[in-house]
Image (cartoon, rainbow, N blue to C red; front, side, top):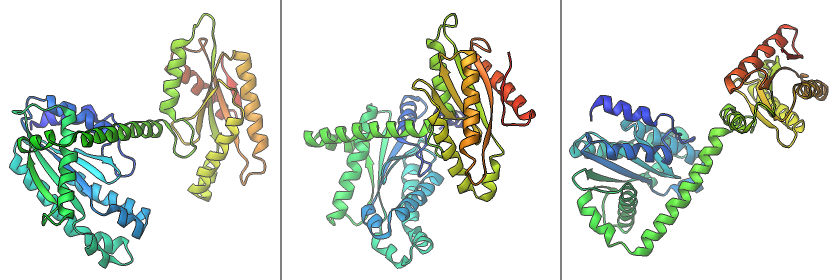
Length: 385
């Protein structure tokens, strides 16, 4: 594959989401990339690889879920070392793409990877398990099917997933029934397609329903993860930007006002000097206090840096915004007196449309006010006309 073209494909997908546990691509990113691969005229021969961990439920049951998660991460790291186009499809399933225009190279690399992971499994158990000799009971660790594909035979993208699922399913079933001596197999697309066409209709129906359900769940989880701050549980800066931009589109600058409170904690790093756990807990407690001050239509988010928060108040006038900011500042100072280290906050205030007609202009004005609040000795609300 042309290196420039490969770089372009990677760049195109770089803004998509990553599986939080393994660091692999998630299904959404993989589908996006696969669509580009299948439409790329320079990629004539390519291979899709389906991987499923054998006896993963038994491993979780015997060693615990923390061990199982560590094993998934270990496997994922080795898959990614060999192939950057690796996706975690679901719990213990992975898909990979080999894009060099040579099936022999794809097959060789996949076989090497299969053997290496199984060979190195004992070293993982030695490092993570109290009884590493158990590793032998879980070999081979992987079921791996390699499907060689070609542009000479046209195929829909959803059929690629069907081929992978079916090939892994068939290989795993035959291996369990002792009809095969290995859980690795290479399939040619032209030989596999007739098998798919003869699969019972209810199997295909169940497969489709399962995939739709899993994809919907993955999308919901990915969206929540992408828009949430993992420490405070609040919406993050990305969610705040989206909210503000949507509100601005719906707001009439001739009639409506919006106040933005840009909040920064004063000397909150003192909690991190106790421990980072103390710092995280303080952020969670502070977020709860901020939530108490919210009216129904107001939006609270943690901003880009650790001590920063924003509150967006649609329909709030300048005077009402100043009053709300001062009440919030005083409430935080009063309610944290019993904390291990009492907390104060500084607030910069910006109002639409007076200080800007877009997000960047409003943030610039709010940050200017916040900087002045800090220079005045902190624990201040600053509003600049």
